[in-house]
Length: 374
Length: 227
Image (tube, rainbow over all chains, first blue to last red; front, side):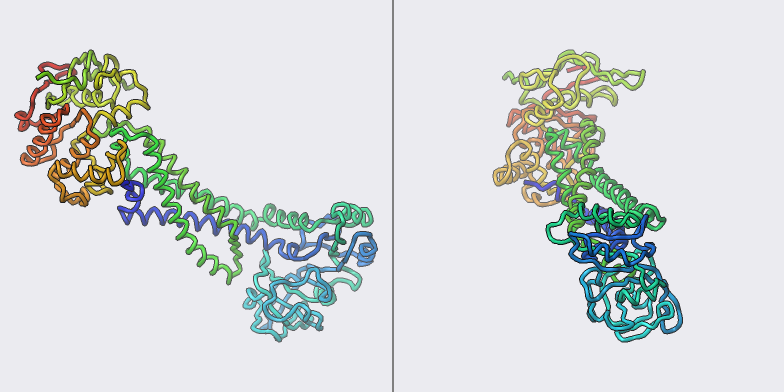
């Protein structure tokens, strides 16, 4: 069988390069923009997602995790006394100031945890151990922010709001949505670094006992703590990411970038495949004049589009790898999951085939008598 | 010897409308094309030759009148049925050759055969036979761009006769060729008519090929003036 679709695509190498470049550009643009969107969305709520907690207790009307005001830790004991609670821990997340060895200051977000417990600990620890946060003055930071914070290695000393701190380990890939890196330390240290009174916390994390209905426990805790809010972790994570992504300029910029990436990508692919089909419009006219059934012409155009989609997508994967690899060492969190890649494969094939279908409409509208017009 | 009627055109008119203006391209044409004959259609530009050829080839619909192809009235066929008639009964040769540039010469013929239901090894074998019939067996794997105009038109002839259609319709097949290549193409068309009993209709302005005609039809102002 003469492979017309494949030949149409491969015959003109320069045209093929242009077609593939269009698809690669579109796919990379969409994947990177969506990856940035997901990366930023994830980074807004990473401490929640990795907290291991089932419920978060905050001061009343806390809009998102980064701005919770403090409340008296006596409520922590009321939580512990609630039936269905397996564990509860005090937890602090609050802005502070980091001063590096040259005296330069940076905003940081201090995360105060109980290193003897299980909830809220730093994750992806690549150097040191979370248990080392038990040491006095101990902090852990993410390796992405080494340069920003002036950190070179474990054992170095810095200052957080005038308190001396020692770096005891590094995490990997814990990005903050804002420019302020997370600094993990003990709950006690965090109280000092964030100017909390000795009996204050701004969160209580709760682990429900096995088999307990989470919504019932949430309602019960809410009843016992009428001056606080009780959220399921997922609920508070969504509230936090919605705040950052939909009510701040930064979040909306990322969102608009993703939407624009999708639209521009769609337009580029559609235009590219449409142009590829139009390059062969006279041949399709000849096919129709010869009496080729419409189904044959459809098959040629759609096969052409599908081959271009698979090739373009495969090459785009390589480019995306290098782009995301480059992004991983910077502050830009491009989160490209396997699920996104699988979805993008179908989106790419869908875009190309749709563009093919659009050009089919043009081809089907051809007057076969055009072949007699020289 | 009485030849069979391949196409019968009766009282055909064709009017092109554009906005409020209408142009009558054919004005009551009656014509019979027989198998085994090479018919030349001549006439000045705008006389309606190509329009009549398109209507005989089931590419255009007449405004009124009837067309019979191989004894069957095709006037009332719908848009889906017309391509099937073209595929089964017609072979087309165009002034600009209209070969598929991304396929080799042989594959161009194979494609036509494939559309008509012969593919695989059988299609390849038949395509090779047809390429040899037009004297281009050794050019089977050449792309059209590597062939001369005359050779490309001979490939177009091989493609047109693929699947043994009863009717070959050619629009100015020699217009883009030098006289030698033009005669060579016409010799093939003449032998298709005489030896294989095809009905061959050639629209032309080219007086150099008059001696190949079994019959010449003159057209003027949308009417057959001499047949």
